[in-house]
Amino acid sequence: MPQCLSSALPKGILGFAVIFSASLLLGGCAQQVSPASHAQLQPSRAVPSSSANTQALNQAEEREKSLNYGPLGGQNENLSNAELAALPRHLRVHFAQNSFHVSARARHITAENARFLLRFPNLHVRLEGNCSQPGTQEYNLGLGEWRAHAIKELLEADGVPARRISTVSFGKDNLLCNQNTAACWRKNQRVDFVYRAATGRE
Image (cartoon, rainbow, N blue to C red; front, top):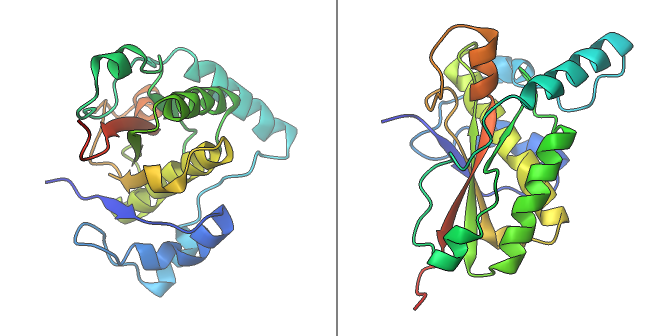
């Protein structure tokens, strides 16, 4: 059974950063983090300031356009025919290596999913954070949660209530591609949108 990290997080990425090490201690699927390792669990979020790094980010976003953005997330649960027919075209966003910066394309996809959630108030979404093969599972569990939480913040900013959004991180246990190549890693560095209907619906 793959390891995962799931938690209910406070609003704001700064608040999340403060409790990040504590969240790794929650639940049976999280690995314990030693104080000495905290400095290593700080992936990049901000847009790089140097021209070289900015160019690299732009190139990554161009590569992102070639990835498959079909509805390939986890299994959607108990959706009606109308909800299934209205599912957003893209149920996945990708990230640069070792980063939870949300690209312009990922923001557009997230906004599309926010509109879907607002249209169907009976639905909840689970944001599944995933990483590529490099790095320890401890690090990747954390990075996957940072990615999921970054998307959660955008959904909330677009008006989706926090109670309808949950996050989980699979680290590097939920790979789409197993090859040890940069192209394969890019496919795995992602957050999937997984929808379910609220319990008790008729």
